[in-house]
Length: 311
Length: 311
Figure 1 (cartoon, rainbow over the protein chains, first blue to last red):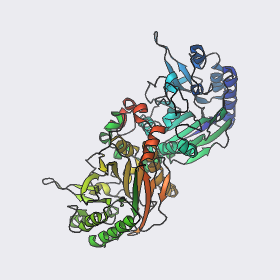
Figure 2: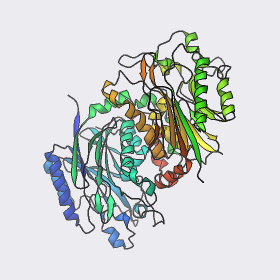
Figure 3: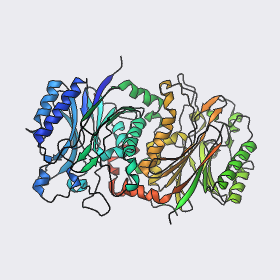
Figure 4: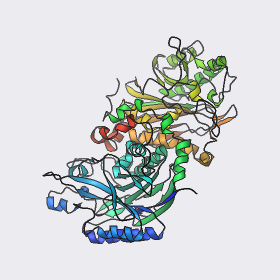
């Protein structure tokens, strides 16, 4: 008998600015119920699954910024999600904007929490690769994540869910090979990922046709090169005038697409992930202990940018 | 006016065991001449471009093993290649089995050298990720590279060719994301790669249909994630009874296939690589200096294997 875990990625259509937390949570609970009916044992939701993707705007009013953040998770608004997890015996990973003050310092993170089938917080991850800029920059599509969020400070933790190593990652994290490698080194067999990705970038109109390719390529390579499952959920469709790509997917440790969303709206994809396949791929393709050469990779953890090019 | 360098990847059909070095060098010179006619400015040949891929055999006779190695490069046998480079004003990268003795120690490496358009050695790289095993292992297709070669000890050097940063990589190196990342951090804009990849692996018959996908996926991801050009040349077709995949390719910094071989024999593919596109991709997708977080990646350069999985 092999080991399996049935994964569901719940893609979401747009969350409008005016949607109340309560409305959005109802929508998430409904998706959890559908996932349970489909036999899912673990669910992942998109990045900023409780709010619209507000970093597309320059917001000066601190109270308005605050309105997108959770100062506790669960709160009275989000508690119904935890109740649903308990009732359905179904764990989930949800991203949200986290306010975590320390003393007088207002600390804000782009965070994903993993919740058990008993409705308990297992652990949380804070986005390491915060993209965008601090201010609006000419020639770039406004994307002010670096204005509103601190870079994650919890490393790349891996959590146990039914004895299986689960890593979490958020949006831009998926483009960096270090994300998957760090999670694999920390014991992940499955990576859960949420994202919001605009179709059009002012800074690279030449590559508009490559947006979906650039979405899937690093996730497929990350799955293959680390022999792990990746389940990724997008926010998709036109949200507050901005077109977000979909392409939510579940990727096998072979790098193959095992399931792929077909719409730009609320859509659930499900796959029964074979954990023995992880071991087979590791043995056949990537025996880290035998073949990796960490002494040769030092600069990856020491140097941020490339050396000036040789003359 | 943009900066360009016209790259050629010269795929080779099989090199039989009985082929003399002189015969094989003639074949390489002929390919260099064709590349020059096609406007190439830098050429890459496959891994073990001077011999058959002998690590498929368990060889006990040291003299026979010796026959596959070069104790100098150039030698009288390989000098015609250097003469051709000078005559054609065309640089190339060639892989071969290097014997580099030190004192009484017989040191053997799987090596690639970069040669200038003046026919001078610019530099050399020794394969970091030596795959296979030291002895024949039941359940694995015999692949004894680790019996015959030491792991490379020169790091991931980047060389200047007409002022452009060139990194070298050999076969199995292409599957590891650290290869491209190290080369990019060391200043590479172009990675030249040679490989010999058998179609069938006894250890993973379930993944036979994925061999070409697994060939291209990590190279495309490596190109995209590091915004550099990759030119890769295969040895292809049935060599000494073993079927080698082809799929030689030139990949853009967008991860797109710019050129792809269509045969399993001697075949040249050419592409005029736009170096300004490298800069555009770096700016739009991967500004290392702004977004990388080396302090979060330490384990990549410190730990070989994954932690035991959480319970």
